[in-house]
Length: 106
Image 1 (tube, rainbow, N blue to C red):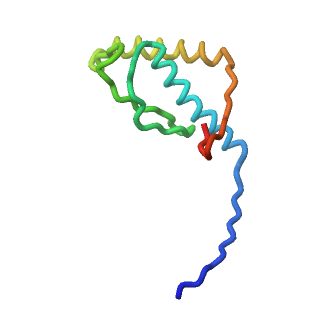
Image 2 (image 1 turned 90 degrees about the vertical axis):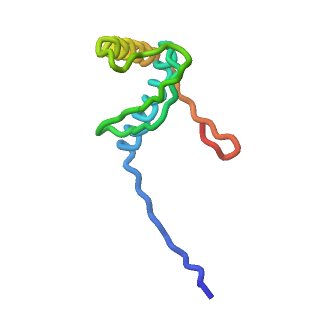
Image 3 (image 1 turned 135 degrees about the vertical axis):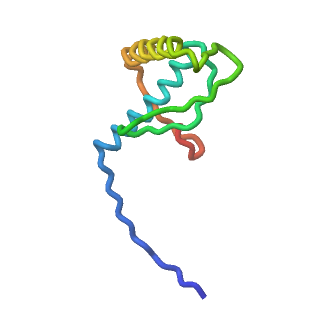
């Protein structure tokens, strides 16, 4: 018969790093808002929210504004628009709220 074993684990969180990671993660959500505000209806796919190279990969859809990935000038223009929109959103300094409903954190 298997015995039940009690295992004690101690976890220490580096608060400064944790807050940086949380801000980077929130920036990914802010990017989602900016993408949508520019008329794109892309689906957020994979994301990486750490300071050594954060990114969000988007999956283009047939809805909304379109972008020809082969058109470098169009891509540069969209990047500039996203940069400007992100700066506007950040300047708003909107509050971030966290709620928990039925054990689910939002």
